[in-house]
Length: 301
Ligand SMILES: [Zn+2]
Image (cartoon, rainbow, N blue to C red):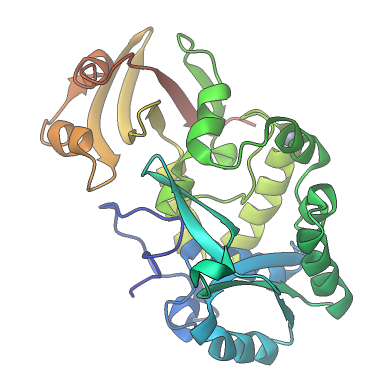
């Protein structure tokens, strides 16, 4: 199944994803690959009642098709009155902003979707009026995380990760709060937690995990295996992770590397069968002022 990689916030990588199934139906295929994996997941959470509203981004030319499908699912749909553009940050991370229509950016629109017409309309209005607190609450984000966002204005994963931990410390966090792999379309929660230890985000993550476990156990198992990993993020933009690593004190041996198929550091290091974390850092030291963070995500609650 081909996904909408060209304008979603997912980067290409070499992990083979299973399809997301709802009662034996390949739901991504139903939507013709027009939604990214994270949006399909959110749609499942919406249908199950775990979320009250979601926002998705689509091309204007696909509006009728996607809207009809959502209406068939008994959902209420509103579209943004403005257009959006996908903006690359440092060439690695993507975020959306309102388009400058004078530049003929009339391709992407947001859809606000809920089971209740009042809620989808409120979501649309809160974004148009830039009421971020209300917007976040309608999407089910915890207040602590929205407040942190309003304070820092950080809206992309790389920057969030860099401020989330001290450089020299390698801490362990719950895998359900692992949003670092969101750039590959691998995540359970869809917001940036105020910290990787945020209890409220974990609570939501557990709720979503229970829903997904029931709807598509195979996909949940896949997400869990990927998210329980060692993640190394470089200020330069590289993000590399491994599910197979051995941690002995400060020494970390990496046995299998995952990352962006276009990233030179990943291409170089993934050829090795195993190496130490320090080798990985050294091999990226040609980048000026190498700045990085290391995180371990595991099954802690
Ligand atoms: Zn929080």
